[in-house]
Length: 88
Image 1 (tube, rainbow, N blue to C red):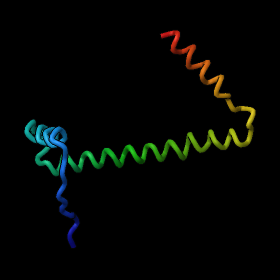
Image 2: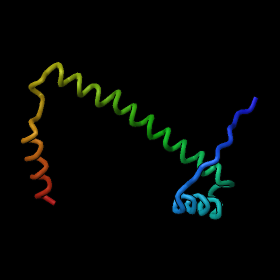
Image 3: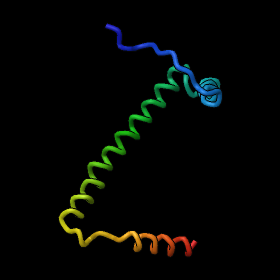
Image 4: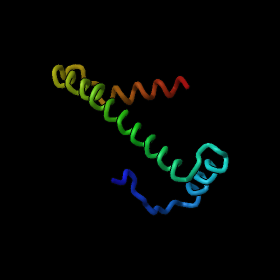
């Protein structure tokens, strides 16, 4: 049984050149390898975002639901951001 599938894709000239440059520089043996690596990086980023949502965001939401007094008003957020901006 075949473990790969062939696709025909169209890339903007800038991305196509970036793929070719990677191969010409010897970083990858083929254009397909560049695309595969890019898709693996995209999958890893998606997994990291999902992990962050499940661990940090969900727990923060649960904590806020359990104790709404922990909420920060939008006015407080704006004031904090303005103070940080003023420091820079």
